[in-house]
Length: 145
Image (cartoon, rainbow, N blue to C red; front, side):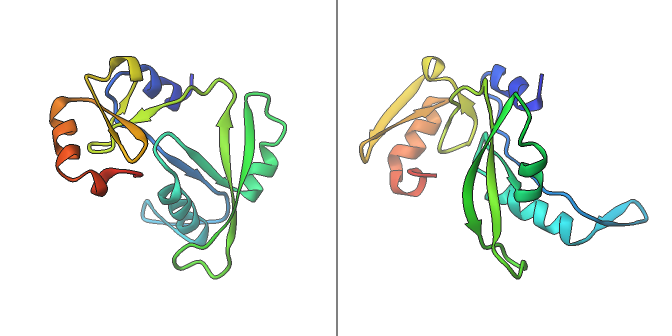
């Protein structure tokens, strides 16, 4: 079982996101440096809750995995990276839809959500009435995130 699968089974656990890239790094006194590490961090920051993103070399090497499918997200520009990078969404075949509370970012199952509110044609689900109340006070701040 993957870390993502374990998190999906745990109600109210904060959603995870991941980014994967490979390359050379330099280790010095237990700390790591290098462009590959910088790019992996940028790809991770670009991922949404519950999403695993990877770069083209990783997608190519994982192409034949039965338990995964790659979806081409396209070229993405990252801070401190000279050229755009082709990014792929690493979709797990058994992946179920994960809802995320837009206020606190905790994952929640639709059937377990104690509160839900419509806004702008979308229904938002919340882990608590407190998060729903916070959203209701400033929905434009949280909607779409």
